[in-house]
Length: 249
Image (cartoon, rainbow, N blue to C red; front, side, top):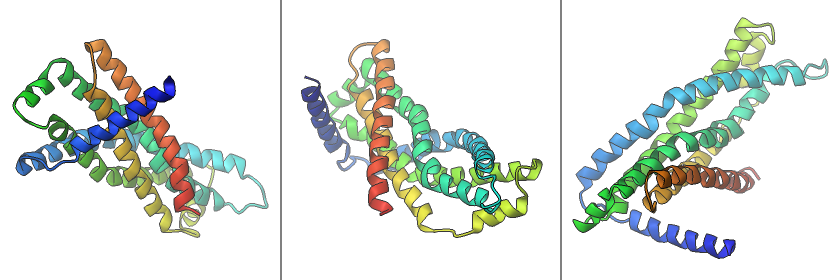
């Protein structure tokens, strides 16, 4: 029963995406709405990304020092390990899990509210493809802006580690800086960006799907928002494994 329901849901999701990715009727309206969504979904997420990354970078640095305090391990390995953890996992997978809660719930609740207040029905009556009109700008905006959030995450996480080195005796700034620069692999940055693009699509499309097919009142909107975050998080973890296997082998 659960398997049948899941397959039916996936089929409905695919049909939904088919409606979303059609040519917009008015391109100027589409571009204006995309810019608005970039501001709402992307730019407004920068403070959260900066704050979380700053503290996580500091915590990773402290933990790396505690777990590598051996005369056999060079001191600069703290900076090296911090850098690779941030680039390989935190700046993409963990960041997108956090954004699934903020951005995903925002999209699901907004579209769900429009559904229960019959605004989407009104668009359909006017002959407008409501899925394309409402959802496509959100998906495009979030996918376009997610690399910026990833770069912010990388930079502020490194800054958090640097602040720990500067204001504590955990590690010297010189050794931490040397560790960040040592054996740098440029592909890790591209790897993080590629993964984040996939995760951004998962978050925005899944949240839009759950919001678009809400049935009921305000309680149903809240439930759809919660479901979108849960499903997005599970899919992010699943594709994290798949993409890591593909991109790093």
